[in-house]
Figure 1 (tube, rainbow, N blue to C red):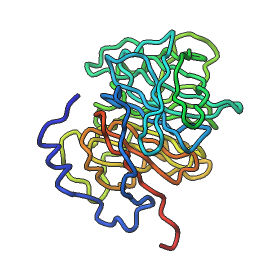
Figure 2 (cartoon, rainbow, N blue to C red; figure 1 turned 60 degrees about the horizontal axis):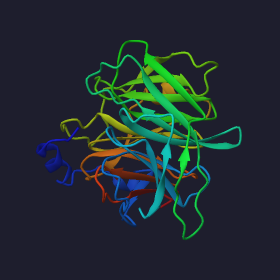
Figure 3 (spheres, rainbow, N blue to C red; figure 1 turned 90 degrees about the vertical axis):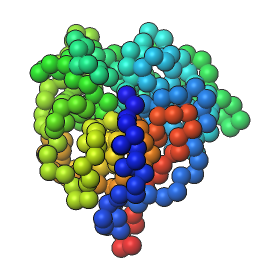
Figure 4 (tube, one colour; figure 1 turned 180 degrees about the horizontal axis):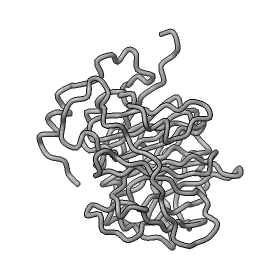
Length: 302
């Protein structure tokens, strides 16, 4: 979906967090932009679970079932085709390690008309990363798939996160007001159709400094820190952080108003990813030459 000129103008206006110096992450100048010519509508971003030097990306609906590899500055490092899979409406990408093995999760969860009777998640072993001077190529296939529906009817979802430690997948609805939080098992006991259970919702109380802009609260991407300490959620307006205390449920963490890290001013952003050590959060927008935005964790005492 393309956002209107009104939203684009507001994003460019410079509205931002009123107390940015207190934000847990501080935006820094991008080190580069995407150079993958086939990434026309980047809808998902994930840091490699085995290397801080690489990013995985996917395209939106209507594109081939492919996973693209980029360097942290956006440099193109090839792609891999995914067999036994179809890009109906891929909307998010996650990375994680389970039982010592690295995986990627592709979320085929887009449903603009809220009519899909079931959606699909593809869990793919991370392909072997290329050596210096080489590019990725070849094919991969899912290790397992998760067919699911929502317990209360179809939902459009572009924000999916994985908590590998808990063995859970989180999904945030896009078009409901407020956004609803759902949960699925990461590795179901069978191939049968799964049911995403509603476990909470984002509070309607908005963070300080949030302007009333069209589509500004719709989640378009999500990632969970590898240590489970926080979830990052991006919307058409900005970047939000949901910290989670040790032993706290995700339902409880999402029940509090999030911390607004600021307006990204990048137009249609649908992809967000933590670095492996959670010290950096990266964003990219749809379009072939999006900058790779960086939010760096603030040092304590600064």
